[in-house]
Image (cartoon, rainbow, N blue to C red):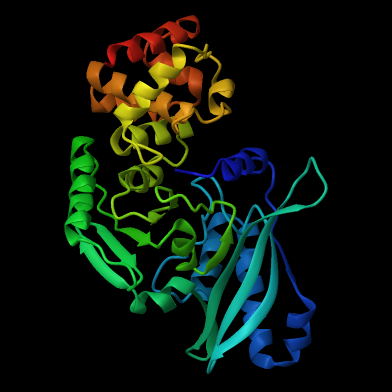
Length: 367
């Protein structure tokens, strides 16, 4: 389950905005006489500036400035199409001493909206800096809190959660088996680890990464979120929808959200309900409402149906089901290489004028 607000922000801003802007608060500026604080601010500035460079030089600079054992999991913190430090303005409001030669960098990431005055704050987060080998390097906040969390590993999935939560580890084992079964079915040989963070809600899961606020926040018990490349945030031990994302998004980062959400919904459901429930819910809704399935913009912007069904997610799941039953898994994967809605239906041999009838026929097959 993903935030519609955040997806709208991606659509509006990601194609056009590529700014690397970092400013410091007067508080940080006043502390610049402290050599250690000044050194931390310099490292942080160089890190943010590196995202404005060509890929290889920027990568090389970041490798020298980053010292964490974990990858920078805030780097792609909004979607597989968004780089946190590239598409937003960063305002560092404090650099706080937390221990001897260790500091906490607190920053607000915000979008400047081109069509309106003002900014949208989409994350408030912290990154750590510590002196190693005579110079300061950056560390993800998760590195610091991870030793105090419960940890369980099943196949390629590492589960982390606060000690105040208790789970039956059999649930984790089912998740691990689900991921391996899914990969085998599609011939996926990638064995990269998935980091699965659980909180009492998604907001607490965000906090394990040092994010105190995110536009993708949710208090819903079934909510979940996947950060590129393979980090799942959730309040549940069995969020198969997000596990599918953690497998597929890194492999197909340019695929349409229709296919990504479709395959995740087909195998993992959404909004706390399985795929079958949502098909029946849509069928009931269609008895009294007309839906133009041939108009993708109308589908993607359609309000959530009563009962929690997202039309875009479900249409994608119907496409996956049809491709599987009629062509097999190779066809499903080819759909992830399609560039847009029309090309997906061209791959399936469905003409634009036939889409509405095609969807109605698929829905009618479900009892």
